[in-house]
Length: 139
Length: 231
Image (cartoon, rainbow over all chains, first blue to last red; front, side, top):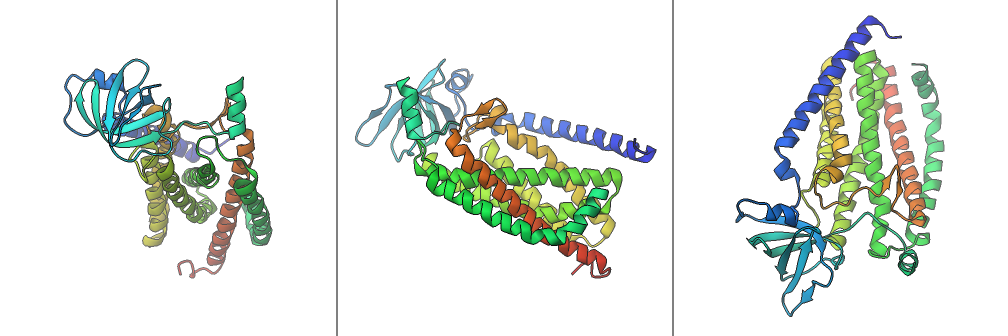
């Protein structure tokens, strides 16, 4: 179908493209630690040494775990295997709620206590009108 | 090859028709997105940012893949029109990339609680923006005609590797950005919200075609008047 020269070019480009992908893959693989935006409670639990640096923990806000005091809110982040208690004082985003995704940025005190400096809500990929949501819940 | 000659023939005439079509589709899309579509159960009206954010992200990624494929095509088949088409596509791709980043930021503040996060999806989208800027700049900066072709092709092919990273970043790594709503297996966006999403996508694609035609026609005139190749 193609001429000899064209075939040669296709082979060359294919080979260089594959090696490029390999290079990028290796770079990303070695940077994995930094590519991941947050750690799960299980990953915190599995750490051999607790860091003093700022980290982010993500998961679900456990049901019935949210307590709001005057200046402080406490809740539990869970990944359904392990959980970690979080204490935070400050502004919370609109979508922060029990049984919804959350990312907390702050410092690890011990394996199940975390002081958050910033709270981000992580929302899911579902979008629907309120009526549909109601109908689904009534089912 | 025949296809390109055909494009060249109709590209001057097509401009005004595409413009008319764009206005019609955009009006339908805006009415759908702002008035007729329902608000979200969780985010209420801020979900409407989606109808600009998602289509512009799709369009910018789509345009970059076309640019990269055309550059690959030129390297293999040595057809000068491939690169002219690719060059003319780039500006609208960059515009939509910037719109996606800015609207994402505006959407992020009320929902996530932050304007910006260095997570994999957002960062890889910023990398795409940098590739667009490099691509457009290198067309302007380099004087030598043969080397400019090679450099721009190289940039676009390098950028091509970034596209699957953008697409799958939300699955491969923990990100703040939520995973894809529309997959082959179905959509987790309710059908009443899908309509404005697709109409707006069509409008943005039409706008890109319009800007492309304007750029491409200028390039064709430049090629015709040899010596006026660079203004």
